[in-house]
Each structure stands twice: as C-alpha cells, then as structure tokens.
Image (cartoon, rainbow, N blue to C red; front, side, top):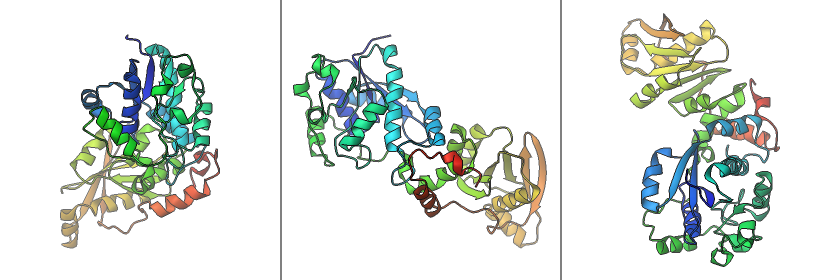
Length: 357
C-alpha cells in the first residue's frame, strides 16, 4: 500500500477540500478519509469527488462506533437538535488516528475554521477536541493554523507554517477565493450534511435512541425509511412509495412483523419490538396499515371485509380490520423530541436511561 504524509478528514464540504489541497500544494501526499453512517456521508460520491477535486479518497463506514457513542450518550452533549457535533469530531479523529499506521501517515488534517460554528469550532472547543481525541501533537488545521499554536509537523518543517492560513468567522469569502485559486468550479453548498441537525430527522431518530434498550445501526436505518409510528415500545414504519417498500427487504430481521394488505395495492409496513407483539397492538397496526391503501378503504366503505397479511419469522396469519387512521399509534413530533433533549442537556447522561419510558 502507498504511504502518505498525512490523512485528512473529508466530509465533501468546501473546507475539507481546501484543507487537503493546501497541503498538497506544499508537496505533501494526503489520503482523505470520508466517514459515513446512517446520519452523514455519501460514499457513492467518492469517485466523483476524486475526479473533480483531484483528491485520493477512501470511504470508511463509521456507523457502528457512531451509534455506540449515541447509545452511551455524547459526553459533550447535543446541539440544537440531536447533533453531537463535538463528540462526533472527536470520534472521527480517533478513527483517523487508528488508521495512521495503515497509511504510513504522520499527521491528521482537519478543515475546521476558528469561529465558524458556534458549538464545535470555538477556540476552547477546538482545544477540547484535540485533547480528547488524543491528537494534540499530530493534528493540523491548515485553514486557521496561524491563529492556533504551532503543531509538531509545522515545527519540524514537514509543513511550511508560513503557507498556512488564518481564517476566522462564519463568512466564506476567503474560502471561495481560495477555491478559485485552485480552479475548483463545483462548489459544495455550505453547512448541513448531517441529518441529526434537522428537526424532521430528529423526530425520526430520537424515539429509536430513547425508547429502545440497545438500538443498533439497523434500527437507525429503519427509522430513515417510511412513515414512523409508535405505541409504547411497539414501533411501526409504513412505506410511502416503492423505494421504501423495497428497502424493507434489506432491513427485515428476526422477530420483525411484516404487514401487507391482502388483495389490494398498498404499502408494505414493518413492525419492530424487543419482545413479541400482543394481539391488540397487532390489530391496531394492521388497521393503520390498511388505511394507507385507498382501494382497501373504498372497499371497506362498501361493506367488504379487509384483511391484512401479518408475517413473523416466516409464519403468516390474516388479521381482519376496518381501515382507520385513529389508532393507538402516533407519529413522533419534533416538539416531543426537543423537550426530551432539553431535559437531557446534562453532558454525559446516557440516553439508555430514557429507554423504555
């Protein structure tokens, strides 16, 4: 395997592109690592990025360690939604450090800009990230390096500190000028990239983290598919279109309940619970699933009996229902998630403490 001088955290955003390119301009060889999970990352775009930005990029699945961090509770808390920005950055740097020997690298590169983000890019927070990730002597932040203390790679002369930058604040004028200098014509849109910063996704993901005893990667992938409904610890997700319906096939696991209206076109639904479903909850879920089949609803209004095919671990039985939206199941709301997150603002409190409530 080829050796590299450094490895760079690469999100696909403009700052991470510029940070890598700045050091490549000094003749340093840089391997970019694009970490991805159910919440962030686009591994399918790596080939395109390599072509248009002239970078060497590997996609790394960080799903399991990221979910483990969420499950334990981020030590530095959540942001405005369900985003654990500081702990995320620490984790990514730890994962990068673990791969340094594999790539023969001697330093890590990050595209952070001092003062750009209110939670994770303050000076004190940058120092905390560097300390907790244990990368104090090997972390280089090329875009704001001149505003920070020199690092070992700079002091040794491996990196020319005079050619690094001193960016500060939330503006993009300097970044755009540098992109033009590097002849970068495809400029990524600013911000975003992480689903956990968004209200819509927080309302989907938060019940999984707060209600399940030990949620895993598959659980969060399921939360990103279809319409979401909960009744105590009974979780139901109903497909909105054929892509959702097809996705369930790859997410189904032992103990899951598969729902499909018999004899009429309609959605597929998946039910999940850590213990067997009771008959009342199954019937309520089946009635809700049937309500999303317009033809089944019309047939029911005309007096026809409607059955839903319910399958668990290969065993199928029929449940006769009247299609209806008013059931014991409800869609999670952003307001509920927001209130519970506010109550959990104390850093280090495990989300597992809320599970089962």
